[in-house]
Image (tube, rainbow, N blue to C red):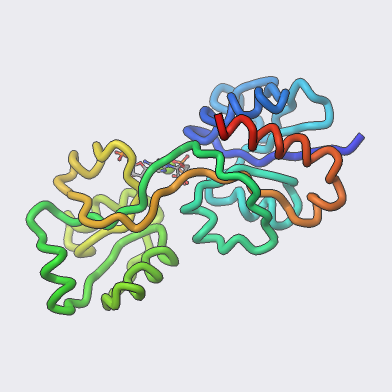
Length: 214
Ligand code: PRT
Ligand code: MG
């Protein structure tokens, strides 16, 4: 029996992945939210889930510690995607990568006059590429979370962050001024595993593909 390991993160990705797993005939034996276990069995003896940080999913799959996983496009861009096959856009955990500023900051005017902008973000690769394409000079300030705070205390002029409802920006008197790209989560597969475990992996990939298209 070929063992299959699927890497998932808790929270929104896990919730939205459950129906896709069900469509592939995979039912976790417990919830990662209530259990502290990091390895969770399923109804299929050959399939197990591992629970990792969202930003660590590509690393586990790249090194073959997981055969497949689910990761946001934001995370995949920052990781680089080496060694990963990305066969399916699952259309889950959707949001937008945005530039945001304090209300009243004239972003377009700052860009027009060629100002050098201080940009706080967790997504430094995405931000670097975006501003380089626009020809805007930036100083990137790497943060690991709560980017919304940075402009409020003078650490940065603008932030690059994910926005879904817009509630977090609003609560902090910030406004989205530019969309960088739409974001959704992708199925990622280890390239060597896809060859070696093809007969077991391919039906799972196809079930995910079919469920995502509904
Ligand atoms: O939380 P942790 O540090 O463990 O990791 P993580 O934040 O990377 O993971 P998690 O579970 O929060 O997010 C997993 C994936 O969900 C991300 O990689 C995205 O692809 C996707 N996703 C979808 C989002 C959002 N929507 C989202 N709104 N990830 C984060 N947010 C955050 C955003 O950064 C901001 O702080 O939610 C806040 C804004 O939300 P709104 O609704 O107020 O606009
Ligand atoms: Mg989070």
